[in-house]
Image 1 (cartoon, helix red, strand yellow):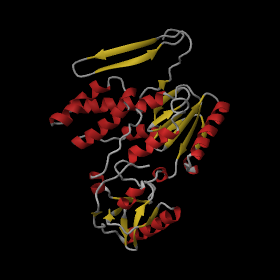
Image 2 (tube, one colour):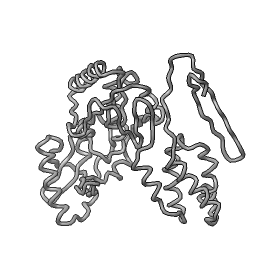
Image 3 (cartoon, helix red, strand yellow):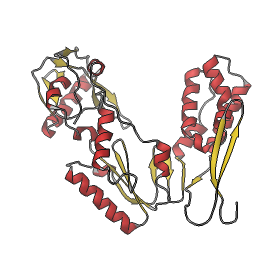
Image 4 (tube, one colour):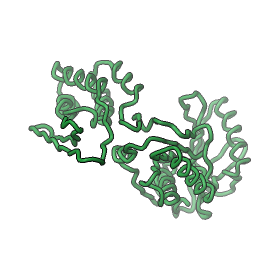
Length: 329
């Protein structure tokens, strides 16, 4: 359940103007939310304005601007798992399934004393949420906290949870079938519903946050490589920040990333002109990511040894953990 939102006795912000098509969409979505039992009519002195955001598929997502409410809300915090560590836990497992709840946030109840504070208005009525809508300050922490509590006995064994995605991984098909049944049984017990169209079962590879994970290795997703390959030359700080943000996300695939990127960091922080030095760094990073190595899952069996290689200079330091194969390479 979402923790206490605020001790304020009232909060009212005027509704933003909506276009004709947005009003039609609002009517449709409100009708659906009422039928699902997610919202109900309200008569309380609270209001936050509704707005719409267009999704990638062209449909409209209804949002509520809770900024004023959030400024006065009790903040709930819960750490998301480190992506690199999470991916490494898949190890050399061979069978994968992915489950997604539908819609995730709507499966968390709002505390009774806070329901009225989530109110929003339309031309045809005033409503309040019975379940947790996106946009509340603690929503992004409350949901993964709930999922971790529900699946706590299975996490790091054969389950990983990231936001509203559940990943199941096993050594073989027979074991995987048992793991999937166990997870689905746990979700059913807690009355949590998955979205059938977003679930994938018994795969030998899967995509996770811009990575492709297989039983043998981890590699960058092809669409990300294509994006880097077609990236235009940088000449503005914001463009440089966006590019460095992407390459930093994949730094584990790029040997000497910090050293190569240093001239671009200088451009961003010291407000110097973009020169051939930055161009060289930009092209090196593009080439490194386009031809990024495949990271093989370590094998913990046998007598093979691990080697820790380190390197440092005046602008960066780094290391790689490498494993020698049976031939010593």
